[in-house]
Length: 135
Image 1 (tube, rainbow, N blue to C red):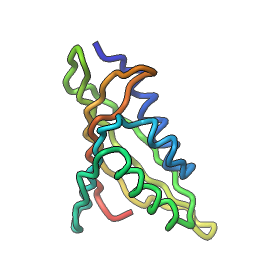
Image 2 (image 1 turned 60 degrees about the horizontal axis):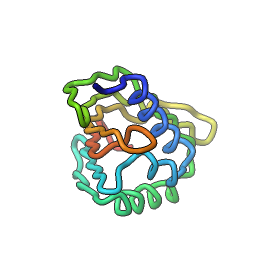
Image 3 (image 1 turned 135 degrees about the vertical axis):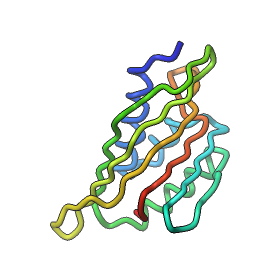
């Protein structure tokens, strides 16, 4: 059975890694064969990026291009399907950005994930992020 609190902590670590621009912490959130897909409403999709090294390259490039401060607020975590070797979990994202002294809602979206338990804790095996607008 999936540990809901541990999976919530995984989402929190992923959000913090984005806010801190910490690709190493992003890497700790995904399995070695992990995959990331991004769908942006009204724009192109990206991915799936896999394995973990490919998605870390994407996040590293995205972090290098950012000059603002981002805050990823993850809420409404739901375990959609719970199995003995993993679970499907969904959550909402609210992305808040501060740039030039102004803070604004930048985007919102929904995560669809497959999480698995590995040595050391839960990891994302698959993550699909559906954004309501570009980030």
